[in-house]
Image (cartoon, rainbow, N blue to C red; front, side, top):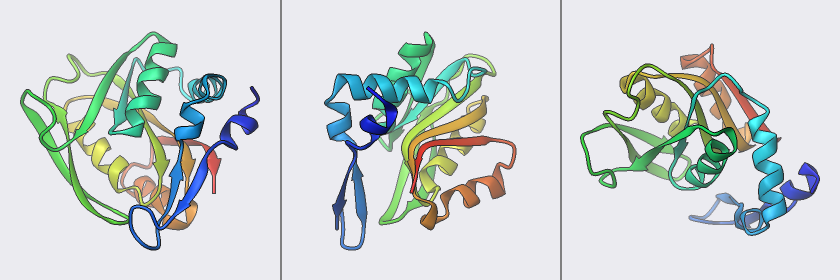
Amino acid sequence: MEISEALSLIRAIPDFPSPGILFQDITPLLANPDAMRSVISALAKFDSSADIVAGVEARGFILGSALALHRSSGFVPIRKKGKLPAEVFSQSYGLEYGHDVIEIHRDAFSSARNVLLVDDVLATGGTLEASLRLIEEAGAVVSSIVVLLEITSLGGRTKIVKSYPNIAIHALVVA
């Protein structure tokens, strides 16, 4: 399947999870194995230097773990508060419709490693910026960020580049 056809399966859902938010639903894309294969192959082309993949809960888990498998590398989950069983680093952040806390295991990276950070959408940049801080705190270095979709009007890239100017950000769709 061509990447453009795969990406056309993403559907916009207005006013979810709250009024004024245009949610980008990737579940039709995920349900189609040819589309998923096309997307993972396209994401894998962005960064070959990383030796481990980290993904942000929840849709970043799906894309990140598939990408890690495609690359034959490990996967580190970045989870919502209270979901990881061992000692964690925590980071609060703002999103376009509220605030939340994410965590990573303190021993997520056994030694300093180059990390490919994956999420589904770059919107305001809060989640990814918090993830970058967690990965740093856990002793690793992010080589780049890959996302399926970037919503430029929300300014997330600008926010991240201001704090992390040397980290490349790649998106399959820029809207």
